[in-house]
Length: 203
Image 1 (cartoon, rainbow, N blue to C red):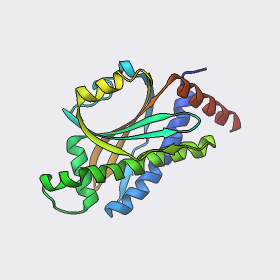
Image 2: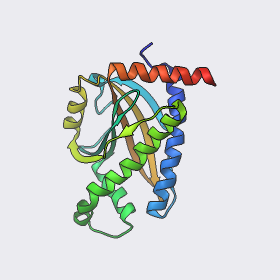
Image 3: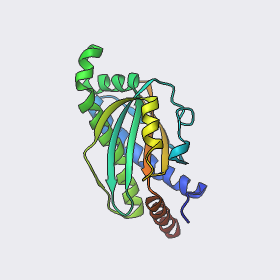
Image 4: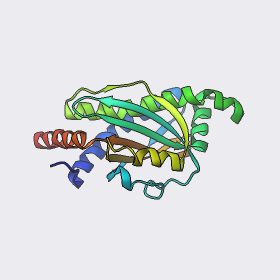
């Protein structure tokens, strides 16, 4: 079997929810206020099918934190926020009344830190559940147009499948919708399914 069924997706939603809880606790310490991450909804798509409409993205530009994970299966992870929401999150993380121009100077480092916290919390929860070990690269951050972003995803023929998590990030009642995307090769998807099957058989 090399596709994710509803049972697989439910198991992943459960584990990513644990990861989101861990990430929210860490982010709360950084911003000095309560942070909530919604229960992620999970779906699998072909990279070539993904566009702004499917992702419910309605912005000209997005901030994207990218990180590579390797282990029994490999994945390229992207954490996406609209450019406007990215700057709002940076303002909350910096805890100051900086101007938009001043915030832009800190955007790269702050968003890399945010991405590192959320991505590693989600992947470590998955590693714990599946009893595997995953290594990660340092995160990188770029701002890209919607067209450029989806062109990159669609042209990624080495990783033809994407696992999409829709997450709401709430800081001080400020709602920022984020999208967590994992690009997977056919082999990695098959290995992920195999490990989930093993986990489901053990419970």
